[in-house]
Length: 354
Image (cartoon, rainbow, N blue to C red; front, side):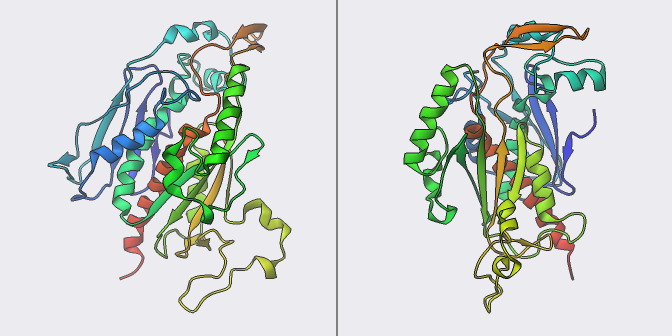
């Protein structure tokens, strides 16, 4: 299987399956001498782990990261950073009923066709549990980035949308509720809605918004490696993501160019920021902001019709422990992938000029 490595200079190679012994990764390219706060890494893992509230999967995993190499006396050594997160609460029997059939909108069928074999326990490598490794690497990347601030939050669940612009939000309130929406009133409504969906044995999608501040001018390359292109690739690599837009996004098509343009101030900043902090594929120093659309979780706890390996129609029942809405736990994953992209381009920027 190819495609398990992300990044050019700051690189993560991840390994592991949902119901294997462990997940983990190797980080290459992290400079020596970076003082690591392990508690901050664990904090981001805790934000992603299952079983943290009534509106997420009830699989109980401690998700404690163990770092095996590349760190000595609290600092990175410049050598590969190897780490693992052990699985402790697998219930593989929950998936025995789909051993020979394919769940709709999952990777089951395409894995069988591509590899001639698949790990049906929780989706194996295609499970969103793989993202735990990304969160560890992203937490290290955040520490490399220093003053750059990355804040993601839930801005929509189903049709329920947070209407306030991000400039009016208090990011310190993101972690004050299980939905991870910084507006308490909207968060309460979203939580109630997700619980009602869960009672139906169904799922719902949503949107995560990410805001990146204090980004220096000059990150990104002007042709194939545009900063927004790599951010888009990073976000679209996350399980269940169906869309990415940055800056004015799709709303920009409704505007005339004269209204859409961001005029300059004398210090190089802009009076508006419809560009989303990126122009010509390169960061311009303004806030980078984007939205990521997540589809409803494909596993519904209802009976459904599908096909088996022999192409026969069969009826089966959704089982197991699953999120009724993935976006609350996706917030730290979005932040992690953004941090990996920015860390990579921060190191690449050192070769921009003499």
